[in-house]
Image (cartoon, rainbow, N blue to C red; front, side, top):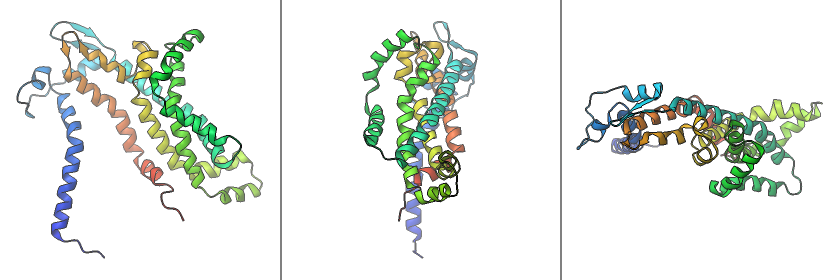
Length: 285
């Protein structure tokens, strides 16, 4: 057993504490800002001692934003619902299409398979602005402009390549001999896929789905251009806090707290699958 001196343990603890403080301090500061008014936030010098208030969260929930100049109507809760619906629906569609496709690319090599897979992956490389203009024109012609279906379709440019390539690697790490043995016993291809491949690659599929959900949740430019205010997610709806009378920092901070809550809760719930999935296949041989 390797001996660790008390000094080394102390230095490691200090280094770990500094790293945690470095990464967690911005989140803590945003959380504290969400309970402050604009006057408290903008005072100089800043202070962590203040009288907390729930007016920021009340404004978001009721949809009425009070500024020094006027009272404004905001649809933050509607934007939050849009984010949840668009992200969940987009990941569900991407899973339905991407997981079988990933299995096919991993198990059935055919002419042009790598070219097709790389073409799908290239959608992740292309800047969103490159496809936004033609997409906006096409959507107007076929009636998908400013619709949930149109946004879910566009979100496949984010989710589908990610799920396809990540899950494909997990399927490739599974020994084909296990599936061959199951097929020899008289089971069909679909039964082998459902009862053998999917359970073995389950952690990887969960990790890919979680990552795709986070990427879809954080998307900004697609919904900004292709959707109106009643169908935009929180990433776009946050622009409503920049008003003619100034920037409402307290409401922005409260909106950030509420908007990261679903993804944080999902990540904490699925962290076992995320860690297991990201480490699947890391050690071979």
